[in-house]
Image (tube, rainbow, N blue to C red; front, side):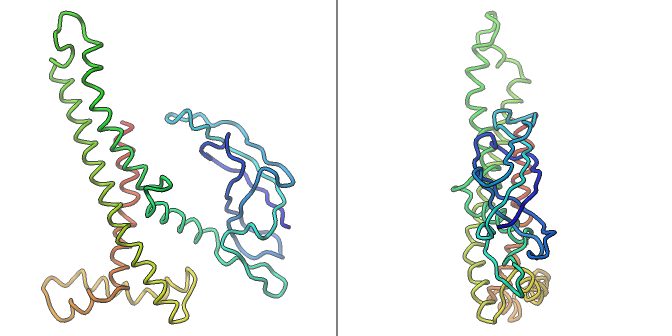
Length: 264
């Protein structure tokens, strides 16, 4: 058992949650470094849902700032752990877990509503909004206008802007989803290839991929077809590095641009 003391910020729908995953850093000499643990409502200690957060949008999401002070078993460490010289050493630190969560949420965008899904949903909302705007404009119109406010140029321009932004947002969301569909099998292939070399874990993989990153940069600078270009393009690790770099831009861009414009 280990004690965990944590204050959360902006946890969505926490009024209905009976468990939470928390990133924690150890100050106990029996546990090394940071990790992610699963906290449950029935654990011994304090599971306080805290004060509801007042947000400008999504007011019905029951966002809260909870407080935890719980005792949890070591088996709740996400990713498992090993024991070395009597000290619990998590297999993955909190940074590695969080990175994997965001990446996987983006890949499985249709399943669990990740970053790409949120961006795609914003585009869908804009398109749906433009479809419903026309009858609403009619219903709110002064009687002296047969077509209501639709006869005013500004209303039509705004409606076209909503529709066009929705189409662009949807296109960007689908592009990101297709990219992650291509990246997912490459990531598995990369992991298998490095495992054959005896390389595993976040930092070890990053170090091993530095050479592939240099080769990927070289490939981007080759403007003409050549034997060298063909050689680099055939390297799955180079392909992985390039697509991973593109995904690192497109995924957050989809989330930030699409939802930002949708809110506006």
